[in-house]
Image (tube, rainbow, N blue to C red; front, side, top):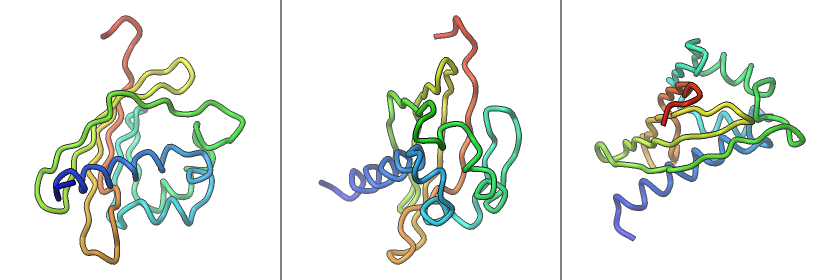
Length: 128
């Protein structure tokens, strides 16, 4: 596997971990996957910073083992620069369909890959 493929694989693995209910329900593993400078613009249009998302993540959809789970599809990644990967995909959570884009960055070998920015957009019914 070449370096670019390894970077994309690592970012996608982190993205999938953040959809895991066990990770979403627990601050420590989620904190290890989010960059301290993290910002999200959620599907609701609400903006979240690092601490705010960590505090609210356990109460968000997809955080319960017995509730609906994220079902991602079409996940792809592209290296924008060394240590910076763009991941895009669609996801379903129950009947709601959303499109996502995330920037993952790795500052150094010790910190590993962390989500730096995330954007989600609801796809209205009937839109392909």
